[in-house]
Length: 300
Image 1: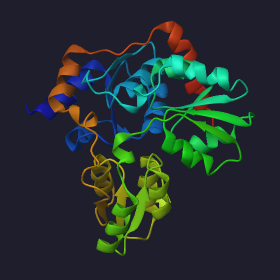
Image 2: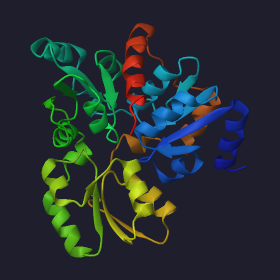
Image 3: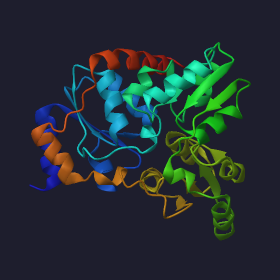
């Protein structure tokens, strides 16, 4: 049997579901039951009947699944796959910020640790950040940890946004000059960038979307060429779903090293051993679950 056949057979035996983020390696996406962005995968984790979830992504994603489904075994195939931005703020720093702004609601990007979620009023993703913020009654909103997503949300709300100075190193490196160069090389292409990009990059783009939003737009658009300003893994899914269209990366350097740590060998090993399992202490999970469920209740 091939490794892929082994994975599929063992997945059935374990009654497992494989979830993979859009930034995962192509071969990992191909064996997954669902490929999506953070919001899609969060919703899937909440409703799955599977006893085992193999989460091909980074640490905060597996934590979120474990928080939503404490009765299930959630396995992160690569223990060292972590999100640097999620660790750019500590619970102590957030509590200090809440003390300074006692009237503000706290919105945390889902790209955050369980401890940060537990200290927040509600989570959001890049797909629903604007809707989440606008759903709040408070006039001031502490937004952590991504300064660029905070700036994007601030453009689409009349609330005062108080940002934390975190960032995604992949998206923060993309530049407005790269957009101008890419447009010159592909003049018929639309430019789609992620809200984690800097404001000046978003200003040069045609649209700012989550990765799920990029997928929906690419399918629906009559345009045949697209410049994609996000992590390179998204290109594979877009080409697979739209073989008649062309997709060009805004930068070939837009690679998340942690997302690329998971491969088929590690997926197979995770199914064989059900390790490393991700768990969240109940006293943190209870509080974090409230902020995640409040996010999932917001209609987009």
